[in-house]
Amino acid sequence: MLNIQRSIPIPRISLEKLINYILTVGDNPGINCSALKDRGLEIGKGRGDITRFFQRIGVVEVYGDCNIRLTDVGNALYMALNRDVALSKMLFHLILYKELPHYRLLINLISEEGPLSITELHRLINQRIRELSPTAWLNEVAFKAIIGLAVDLGVVEVVNGEVSIRYTASISECIRRAMVLIGSQKVLRLDDLNACIKQLLGNIDIKQLLIGSLDGCVEPIIAPGPLGPKSTYFKVLNEDCVVKQVVNVILNRSMLGGGH
Image (cartoon, rainbow, N blue to C red; front, side, top):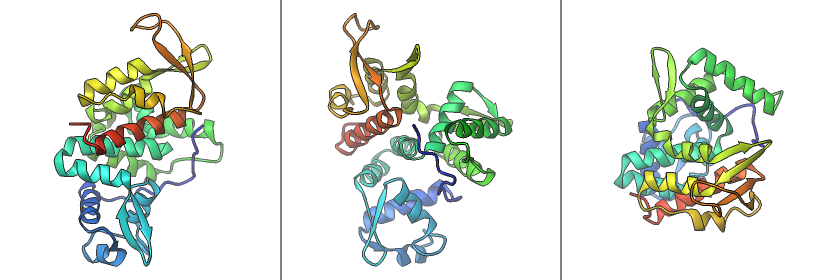
């Protein structure tokens, strides 16, 4: 079950400023909040909206007298930004997909329903959110902030008022499509997931790493599949847990240089 909150902390600023923030903190570990504001890389009161946003999604940590440094996840993103902008956008998308339930619902909804008008998309996502939490919703400001960030990342595009998926969303599509509903039970097809990710990211093979990290998220079963009668399938116990573990493994491999 996704933990749907009533509001989400996505600042309405450009992707360029978000990237410059990460690069600056990566180049200057422990930089103070006030120094970021002086450089025009922070907005809002206190520690700032951008810092709060990155802290919420696990990219930075704040310590001492508002000093900021990158987390392991932040360092993976920082290293990707320094060597491959396309990869860094894909990783940023995965971090958002992992950490922000509203963002994940939005991306999955566009993938499942095909091109949608902005108005219809907003209506449908709030319908999905209400099914999960009757008192929660996504207001127009937050909705537009998510769409804007997804467009900047190349995850979706808006053409003639309709929103559709683009290539940067491919890895999250691997995750979504690998979890299929069989009867009333969701099943993770790990071989399919691994093959899809290897096709996108070359030499990243996450199958064995995932088998060791999905305890509590899935239960192993054996079912016939495209790779033979003994292909390993997993009964999904907690979909949110599966998504987070898959993304964590990809981020860890990327940080170790296992990607492009």
